[in-house]
Image (cartoon, rainbow, N blue to C red):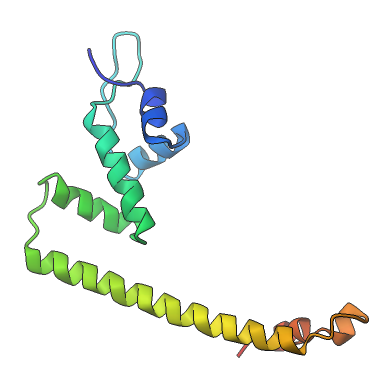
Length: 137
């Protein structure tokens, strides 16, 4: 039986062996057959799938979304161009919302840092701790 061991796949994709196990449990990659010696022997295509997963994660896709993308990529599910466009557009909207939220947090923290005296007793003087104690709203 030809193929790659889990450690060979991990090395080739620069991921941890536990990551490969996790992807199997989540159904992102299939559990491979075992050799006569009991080793899991992965097909070479699993390297491309793991690289696809990592690139999609870098773009902000969740593992559930990646499962759908993999199915479309592998031809397991039929996706139409319109569906893929809508899927990517929704992801862009999510990213834009996260950017707005992060900018709001940054502005709030910058304002608190400006009010920080930089000396004195921490608990009684620190506007950051005071704001956190009262709530961030």
